[in-house]
Length: 111
Image: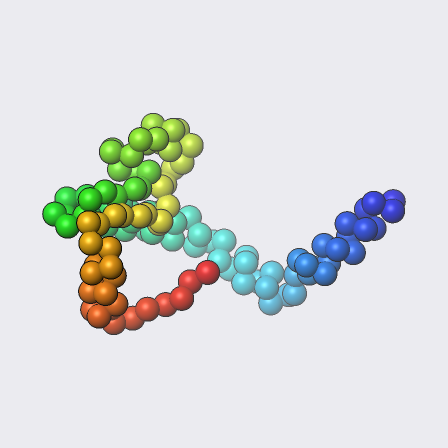
């Protein structure tokens, strides 16, 4: 009982004792469209990854959906969709970053 009370008191401080009605409603509303959004995000990431993989200024692309990914077989067994995160490398990262910053019109901070 003492251990449970200790855990419960700390959890409430860091995570919140319970969801507010508004947060619960937002989560339930978003669950309905989660899978279609994930599918669309994954399809977009795959298109971008394939485009970048063929681009002459890109050295390498890391995305589990690409055939060139070293763990693609594992990813295929574990995932229905490969997600929206990919990375790429270029031979001139500073120049590419400066060019991206100059040409970018809308930037959104995501966390």
